[in-house]
Image 1 (cartoon, rainbow, N blue to C red):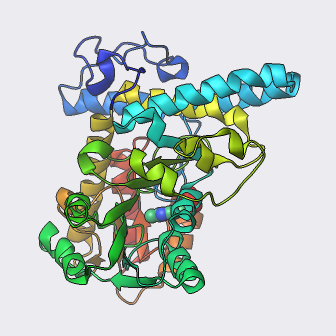
Image 2: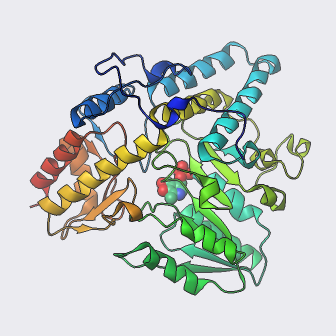
Image 3: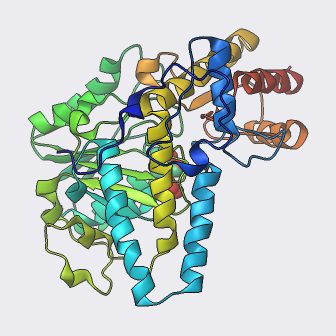
Length: 422
Ligand SMILES: Cc1ncc(COP(=O)(O)O)c(C=O)c1O
């Protein structure tokens, strides 16, 4: 399944050496040789490392941005690449100068395929998760009598869009609820098992819910496959926040955006379709050049007319940024910050309801809590206006920390909440 692009051996770990080395120039110019050589043997050294990573971002000083589930800033290397690509196009917008962006697109798809452990033939680019989801929903030739099983916590682009399409073509949508405080992954799986029938053609769920922070078990995809049911994973909250191996997960479709946890350019997304299924899908949009693609060419599904090709090299930089730090390290850091948030919410606010499961097995970077008798929208506004803390009023108060956040910021969030929630 692997393709030609191979990251260097630095991919999965940070080597022990160079404690205190100057990293100011680090992922700004992410060449293959530019390994992250840092000791993370102690917590202190680990924090020094993450501070260096934070410095790669042009964040507003004193702003505590904990809203990765919604939108992330890019590291400078990525935003500079957007700017450089734009300048390049503005300098020479000829067909001749633009040709290289086609090659860069292939290189990017190859890097993404490697990152996700699938083949380049199975990855294409879209504008965001919404578009990727719609490509599958509108592309699959489902008919009356077919059944689609969805998780109640799916984002509207993976719930409402199925319901609208069902009205049009006559298939049936079944929406499945899962327990509020799941005690085990099996409790998340069982309601789906009960919903499947011989008519079920597809199962679609959010990898991690944006409204509760619950992470669905990957195992669902394998179970579906065994029953001859297609599986679609909405990865808006997992791409860039956890270790991903789509081949191991065994899903048929995976969708995501570059501009959330992946820290990539805005309005870029990915779509994975397992090879044998590509030719079964209708395009949701047909533009000039559509017919030059064979039916089993996934690029056929990304026939979108003129796109902002300047962002392609920037998306590549974002992949390099993740590879340089390592998927595992990023996932562990996010998980550690999310755990700190959960622990501190529980200890500071025993009256609050932690909507997100505590266990790492059933959660990711999204942390949601509800504070009794509080207006969460008001709290969300007060946190920003009075304490410079950016979160979201989704499902209660939603904090989604990522690699530019720190344990000190978690403490500051608790201090601010203490002044607001009596
Ligand atoms: C689970 C999920 N799916 C899809 C989306 C839509 O993402 P986008 O607006 O980037 O298309 C979101 C956005 O928050 C989401 O959380």
